[in-house]
Image 1 (cartoon, rainbow, N blue to C red):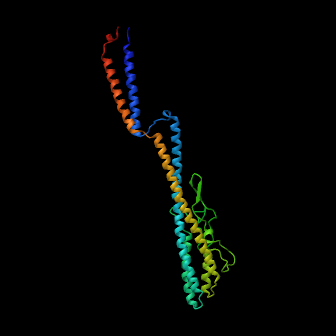
Image 2 (image 1 turned 135 degrees about the horizontal axis):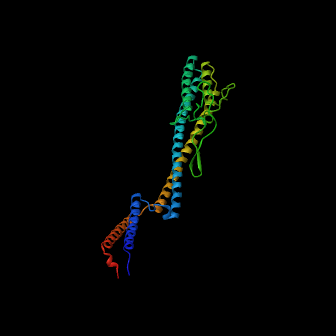
Image 3 (image 1 turned 90 degrees about the vertical axis):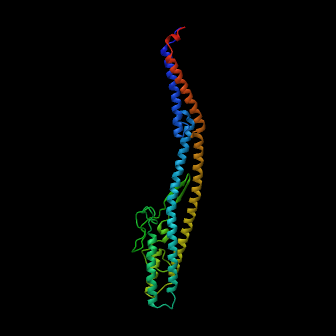
Length: 301
């Protein structure tokens, strides 16, 4: 019986190619750190890894949203804290100016300081964030919220909602009119003026005319309540962001841990397999060389 030399040669080549392929796959896995190089190796695991990766990316986007919302809310909180301090000073001056012991000159001096403080307050209401967006303009973030001459509101009443979790959104700011009061184009009577800037301006005018009206204190107090209410809401939202950020962090970590368990390579096992495959390849190469050196007559029985 004769055994084909070509057949033996092909057997040797096939054996070497098989071992080289296995060794190459293991080398790629060692370099990539992945347990599977293609979905066909483990289809259920591949589907699970895709879902886990999607969950991770989605929650990382929530974290990015939280960062953006926090930046706006912290700026709003800072602006309102400063605005509250300015308004408190204006109230102190208003009480001082209403004292009957004041002269006309005294009241005019007080009114001049109030005018400067009103400009400062208006600047806070027209604050921009790091992206150049007006903080208190609602959706019209590229529009100056309050006219610097008439104090009319030029933004809108909308609040931007942003997703911070799988089923949770938060508003990242407040519209100017809700914070600083509604502008009125009609007759302004102290005690019934809602817009903070108009109320302060009317207070100043009355002091300059030496006819201060105690109703202005009610207007200022009403503005102060709005500031404090908005600040409390802002603080609550900042706290909610912290809580949700922690939840998202835990969820991302859990998904990464699960994905690692499914798809990450066991290096100890892979290195052991790599060593065995190297030995098998060397054995196949040795066998091929031996067969090549044999005479055709060794296969004749």
